Length: 485
Image (tube, rainbow, N blue to C red):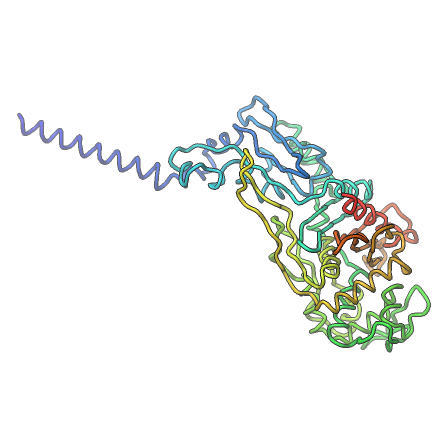
């Protein structure tokens, strides 16, 4: 009898060990696969059972959370939602997350291991920490000036601090309220369908995800390439530039909208935006040097993140001479985001160095303990400091006596470049109005801000559209906001 009891006890012990081994397999080794299983709603429920951390602008949260009383309990709220939508994105129980809400989701949702009091603490206890905070680099006054300046028009603004790469403003219009996508009700579904079906694409982040022909603002790159390559040694010496200029290998002639461009100096051509001069300069510099200079400014970079991804700006690497001529004045296939054009202006203002643009200053715990701090870093060296100094002079001349006088600010030195970019079949569509600029207060040692503005205004008459007229006043308002703060 004792023998059978021992056998039964041994079997029970074996079964207990097997049970413990299986439990360890499920709870330790396969926990991740069960957590990630789409049929498991525990993680989703846990995600929304506590308030989400906040995104902060100028020391004030622009996001919040409210208790809905539903199973997915806390819904995201937004202060001035349309103003900050290109920065925050949305956090939706139904449609997921975008932009900062997505890029910094682990901090905001409380799942980042850095928020745990001890290493592996959450893995052991299965606890969830309170959501942390994401402190942005935005200047609220500049953001609001850009948004109000664009008004009801379609367009975008990007502003950067040249010395660091901090993004001070990032605006896209028309915009939308991300709060419309919070929650799980039928209103969210209707809002999603309406926003995605809208002809003016309010959910498109034009500042970083839309590329445009940059038009004459690209002449900053062409001028820098000509100076770097030694094609132009003196900005006041006449160039050999016919007017009109026949595109190489074609019977097509390029003309100008103003007089005095024939054999004009680089200074005059830059001030008054002579197409013929810059088209020929691009050909004289050559495809290799033009492409290298464009790349040094940030074109064709497919890895840029701020921390969310940015659409790459394009400068073709295979062009014949006629195509190169058009590309050198910001036409043909040359395309750029407003952020890229702000980086170009910032490189001129910053002594030739392109700083990596970034939007997150630091992340913290709910209590304010710093988890991560972003610092300035150099992305590219676009040109040598001497070339940058010459380009600053040229851009300043545009504002003092050229096409960008509407951007002038009393008590500050302002540099700028206007652009009117044609597009569409046979250039039949309404042009885009561009203005890129930088500003330095008279009592400051370095420029405080670099700005790019693009306005695509389908309601305007073609003759009314110009970078100096439509875009420059918006840039001026943004620069004044930064200088004033």
